Length: 357
Image (spheres, rainbow, N blue to C red):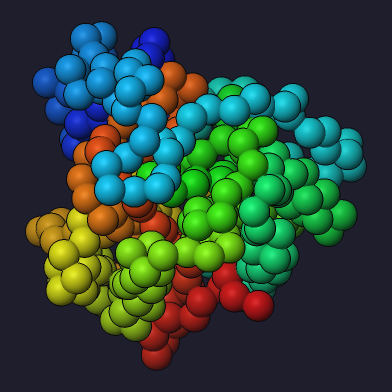
């Protein structure tokens, strides 16, 4: 989570270890400052990204030329921002995460999320609810529905179950769920754009229940989806499943990235590097940073630890462009992107998926 508030769309080129899966106008704790990319103050545990104010020629072409609304060799049109409705209210009796009340920009908390038996049961409850909400949200996907309507339904189901929608108010994120359509890699803000026949949409749900976050996402088909999109979504799901299958106490985290990258390479898909999995539990984002591509990072999984794995694959370019809302991230060439995510618990004999019905 990196502070970056610049006008206009922009390329993202930060070192990926500093970018959690939920990025925006935020700050990040770090023990390894990179002065070329980050503003670092001695004695301070926070760093912030330095984005260039000069838009690249490609960015200007992508976002400032009406002639490029249509994608080459595709019936799809480039995604454009719609109208965003006001944030939805949450009943006062529902417990908020600390970042909502303090309005302080949260970072990645140091230290892993490792739980006792009570904590594990709380994680199972939050994960189960997140999975149920995601499953329900998927049933709403059809041509003509606005992503804002999906947000409304998700919001209502979460608060009806006594939970708080974790994205709402996180670094000023204005909605209760992320809806990322077609070339949107992640963090799409629900708005007035109706889904169209042939779209794919990732819905990312996180709930805060009994002091614990459950975080999950899936990519859904809208109407009649072509083979290019179907194959991408299938392989992305396989990447997540294969990565989960190798998890167990003592396993090196870098094996997750190799497993995902090796499988994506078989189908010539790109693996997005700038957005990562993360520890999750009592806080929304904690150590470790989980990279989805080949890497040499250290660190091993611990018994009773919880974290997310959430690979993002692309048909074309893996380079992300952020819109001027400081949240929505799209592929620079407009190519399709898909993502799946689970929260998992490391058990004595492997891993338990917490976010499944």
